[in-house]
Amino acid sequence: MAKALLGYVGGSDPRVLAEMRRLQQRVQDLESELIRIQAENDALSAAAHHGDSLLDSIDVPQAEPALA
Image (cartoon, rainbow, N blue to C red; front, side, top):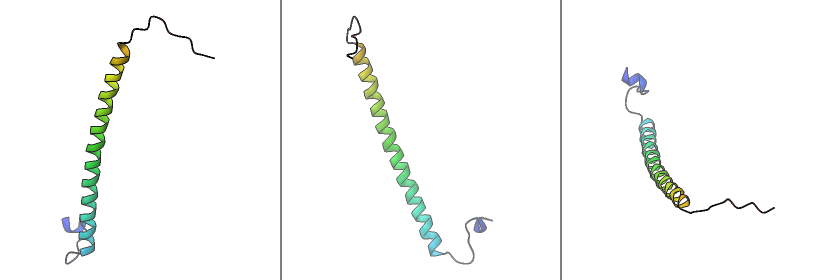
């Protein structure tokens, strides 16, 4: 059954093995990119949260009108 799922007929097809390796490498590359982007997102979220607390600490007694 496993042979049928892999398209295995007779010996190992070098093209299939090469494609399998290429796809495995692509998955690893995408997983690495995902980890990098998640870390960047976490850093940006932390910076945005820090920025919110900084803005909250500014004392503005009254909102200023917008200039027309």
